[in-house]
Image (cartoon, rainbow, N blue to C red; front, top):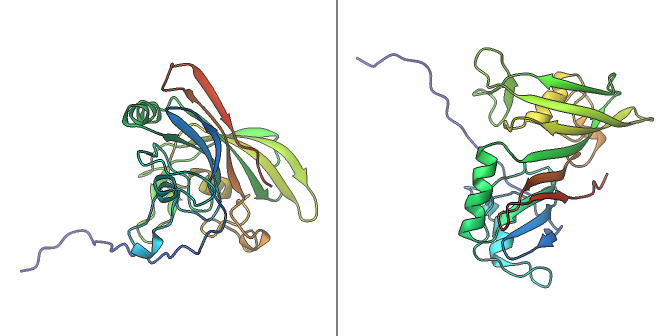
Length: 237
């Protein structure tokens, strides 16, 4: 007699990354870390599909011919989404990577992002506190869910309100690091990030040719001397 139980969901990931012609740019280099600018449209780590071999990590350990040397021991203590551009910190050896990993796990690293949202956000600043859960029926999407979701909080400040069409340039400071947090929180307040293919309204995806979300700042403790360190990457939009 077949056993009965909750239905299982088969996750199918048929995503195939298009070619990314933009380079990974080194913003800072010393003996233990790199700060880099990841282009939009590049995976942080190579995908399970062998066709998705190109990534930030692949380019770091193999080098970018004529642009950057190889860093064979490079390790990524964090990732950015495929469409997100901006600053990432890289450990250049096992000790610095461990040090950075501990900081990310302890949530002591502060991150800031800049995004362009559809419409005018009413308040000049505010906080979005909406729990986030995986959406098993719509992989890789997540959903707002107060019962099964994990707590998620994002602070925002409106930097600029733009006309024709109405858009808001916003600085985000996430206090948690949930998958797609800023993207779904923006949709939750009725102002999706332009160019986002997963969390959108009728026209927000078509308003940009890429996801307009950029990691602008990282505040952390440098693994070499334990001193506070601020990395910054100017927003391209």
